[in-house]
Image 1 (cartoon, rainbow, N blue to C red):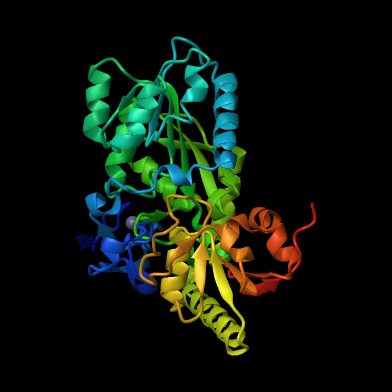
Image 2: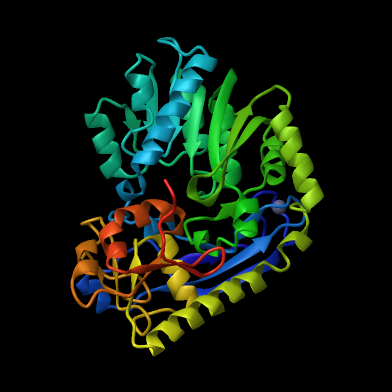
Length: 416
Ligand SMILES: [Zn+2]
């Protein structure tokens, strides 16, 4: 079901150093049906390591993608309104800055149901989606987005070029962090790009992960966590240049990378490389106290919940996600501390969270007596949005617990 790497996913050297061991974790995205609850649930170690040679942070375990991305993997649920708007802005900017038109081509790796490529297709720019998941790919084709049902790699890139397809723009959002053959995917991008083309790549920024102690964004799907230093080394090996970079607040902190066959690094690239060198992001010392800080959050949070329970008060969890599954399972927070969890998605309601097996309900349950006294925000990255949504719960005296970066009780909504 899984393999353990001994060589770095970025440079192949075998000097990996352990940063954090979260222990045996369930597959964080799979919600369990009643029939699955009666079977034994797989648990797989989750260990973060650092490569001193190329400075790539990665997990040691590679779970078989057929197990990880099973047909019922919730692809669609991760696409929020805010993210769709963000993608449209990104597309419009590129159409303008790269002068894209009917003779251009835009390719997206992991194109889902085509929500990004649609922005180009609507303006007469030829597109091609690539996605191995049949459900979303079929929806994309129905919406007029040509989509290949395949995993992207050097072989597919070569096939496309042989068919006369090259890319003026390649989009790869949340791809590099997910692929076991990291080098192959980067190599394939180089093959597919035209001489003046650009690959626009979004990856989680390891500096935000460490600075804000976002350990619950570590799960088996996320094989790598990137710094600008690590990514520029990785792509340079494949004959590519990191031309520009932007920091984004999405998903707890991300980088948007602009990668080309040639060109020189922008001021932003040079500045971030300098900052990382100064902070020591490229050295093991930067990661030394991370595990201790994670343990401290886990212990503080568990003690906070225990003290609330000891007073006879009730606690529910809000927003079921991979993040929440890792937070609860790695902190030992289960049905003894949380009464239940709620989520707005009807696809999740009625099922149970992996590992801790807490049942998922519709958020209306929060207003049914006995209402929980506290709501633990499992999707802390949407805390402002959730606290606004749960006005009624709040008006009735409900309080919120934000677990990260420091567990705290919040009673008032943010000012708007
Ligand atoms: Zn390495």
